[in-house]
Length: 113
Image 1 (cartoon, rainbow, N blue to C red):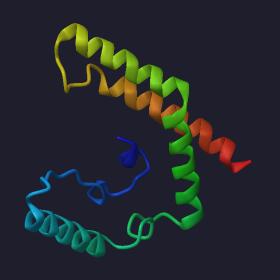
Image 2 (cartoon, rainbow, N blue to C red):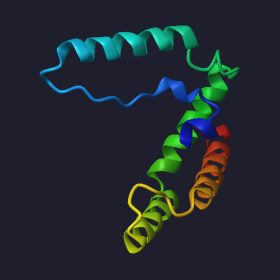
Image 3 (cartoon, rainbow, N blue to C red):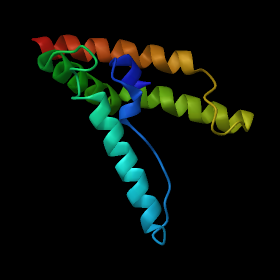
């Protein structure tokens, strides 16, 4: 959600599993991911964002993630998941995204000054 709101290609992040005994699998995963990143290109340029704009947006996102409003929104979502016994599914992704976008916009304005 954060990368999408920053307009950063979500293929820049991957979560894969390889146990300590699977060295060749780990090498394959890292090699494939590295090649994918090389194909995508430099962060920001392939997304059409200039460096200054990208850095401002990333700083705002970092501040939003550390902020109380977003943490409280996540806590409410977690509480609802527990209540509904629907683990792994956000009850209201839209509410969480709204809080994230609003907080990022607020912090981005602060970063401009």
